[in-house]
Amino acid sequence: MDVLVNSINRITANVTNTIENLSAFSNDELSNRPAEGKWSKKEIIGHLCDSAVNNLSRFIRAQFEPEPFVVTRYSQNEWVKLNGYNEMDINDVLSYWQSLNRQIVHIIRNIPPDKLAVKLDLGDAAFREEGENKNLLWLIEDYVIHMEHHLKQVK
Image 1 (spheres, rainbow, N blue to C red):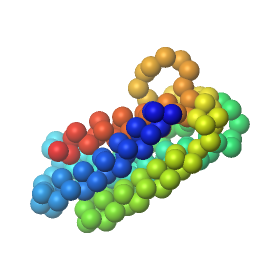
Image 2: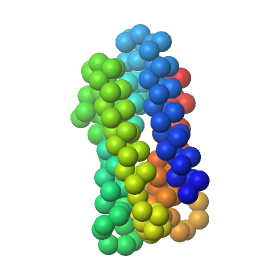
Image 3: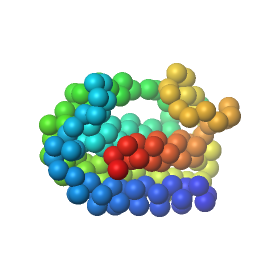
């Protein structure tokens, strides 16, 4: 249960700190792509929105779909491109990301303890490697680790 509480606290702190930190950047700095094929800071936050959308669905569905819950991958570059985050106002992107994470925190705070043990089938989805047995609690922690990995890129 400590992993769950820790994940909730990290999500909340990451969102708050990122919103504060990004206010120091100009729109040009936030929209600049550092290299061909690389995301801008706005697009990285947009990617985290897409991650939140997909994981929110997973955190809900894993509680009632047949076990093992099958985690399907999504086309990250296409999601970022089609959402057009680089053309959006940063405040809109951040507001969207904040709202999604508030809902994620609400959902994971209310997951019954027995549901945290729901087994996952990751198939060809790309996740960090760590043993064979993955469950919903692991997926929640992986969501936070993924978020923190990308937030290092926007500092």
